[in-house]
Length: 214
Image 1: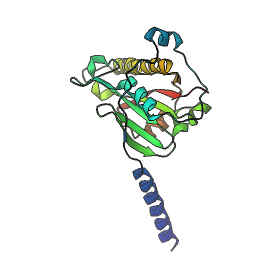
Image 2 (image 1 turned 90 degrees about the vertical axis):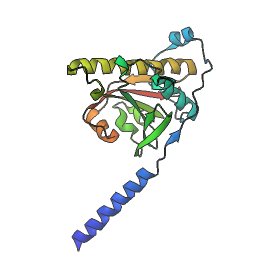
Image 3 (image 1 turned 180 degrees about the vertical axis):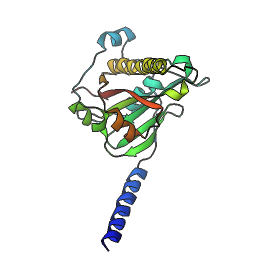
Image 4 (image 1 turned 135 degrees about the vertical axis):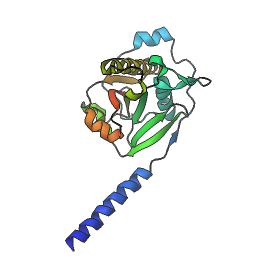
């Protein structure tokens, strides 16, 4: 009897988890706002890292702008991106860890695709502030896209360079728009890979926290 009840309880938990995951829907993002917030040179001058964030969700427009600056499509005719990519392999995927769940940024359609429901912000880094800020970006490289590069170390180098381009774009947008931002390498990559449901060839490279200044 106990074993039957255990199975029933386990099935109930699984069904509840599945239902929760299904509650997340794709998020259509507004087109990036292309008007200048600040002159470029002023944004470069004010670019900095911040580790104090206001307890306030990003507006959908700011979220859209951040993601588009990171790796959005700025040349639709060719599908090329706002950030450079080694040999145009476009190996970087950007995941957005929000309060309600984890999403994958679909750059081509400029929308967020659900990955996991729930608040996983604490898994996006080891610092205390990470778990309470509105947005954590996770930069993933699909090393399988570097099929012409046989040396694993060289694949990692190019992947890291590509991720660096993305994160710097976000830094510059944050400076122009008055956002707080910091890039981080301190993440539990094994745990995060499980949360993001990554394949073995997908590697966690960087994380970046974004929000309004405190």
